[in-house]
Image (cartoon, rainbow, N blue to C red; front, side, top):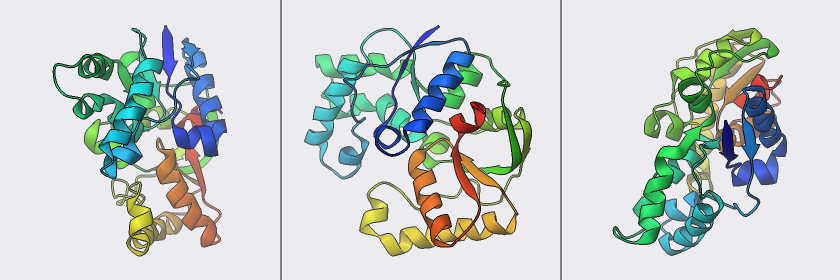
Length: 237
């Protein structure tokens, strides 16, 4: 199967190794991965901040880069959710609205694509350690992605998956929320990290780099040995 990879801004700019791991996972699953270098941002930061004209400009670029019939795989629940809802930015009856509506059913978050579309329950991968899964807000609440990443993680050789009470609690990043309300954002992250560190974990795994940046920054500030890993990095191991 040929797929189109939407790699996301944060991965491209800050953790390109996550993008490389995503390609490795998809190829291991038997996919031919296509990446259009015209892609930039999904438009979510501008959209969530109320700059809808700017969001539309970025959305038009995404529509151009993702034109076609291939499934679009996104290693981020938040960016996948934004692409699914791009039509909301355009007036109904316009060509852009129609293109965005046609794009929506082709968009898949990585774990959902592997499990629900490809029928994969396990990848040939190995990782030694105790890990927990952090449910990023958009992936869980907007896309309904919950069981898929857990199935994949439990099947990784050497992984002990530990479920924590705060797994579905927001990490406090929330895009520009963390910039506008840093004290509250940090307090939300630290509440999660208190439980994480008590559990004696080796890593916290998620599907959104934004969450991993938030949690990883606070873990580093606290001098913690707990690592933050994207799901693709574990599956590519």
